[in-house]
Length: 213
Image (cartoon, rainbow, N blue to C red; front, top):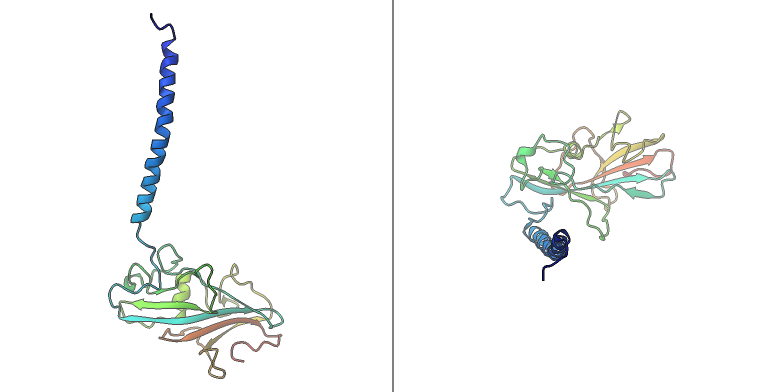
């Protein structure tokens, strides 16, 4: 007996069943592809990773950036983001040729979520060429100004707001050792192994004496 059902409807039903079968297969293939890409993806480049080849310079510098409140009895820290590494902030290319492992010769890692901030940021200096890098070179890669004057003030207004009565002060030396701090050089503060640099933004009308004390 001949099938009296319209051929169009019979074909539509078959295509519908094929589509229903194909959806989970496509999903499985897509998931497997994403998983394979994630497993084969190289790990992110970190500033703190050791250089693959021994560089001419390899050391770190501690940088603490602090902003005091108007009374001078509380301080908040400015934590640097990832700077000078792929995927991070890279605002200057002056010394690109002297970096290692795809990094700028001056770089820093972003803070690790869930860890306590030690009160300072670590600048890693790894360079294939022995050069006299300065704190300004690091700020150039960060894309931020560095200076104590109103016309060349440290950090842009989106990071630290310019406020009347406030000034920047740079101190060199470990702040945990009282009496050993000296004022830094805003124009040319060299980066050398083990140096601790403190930048403080404070109200000169408060009781807070700055980083010198």
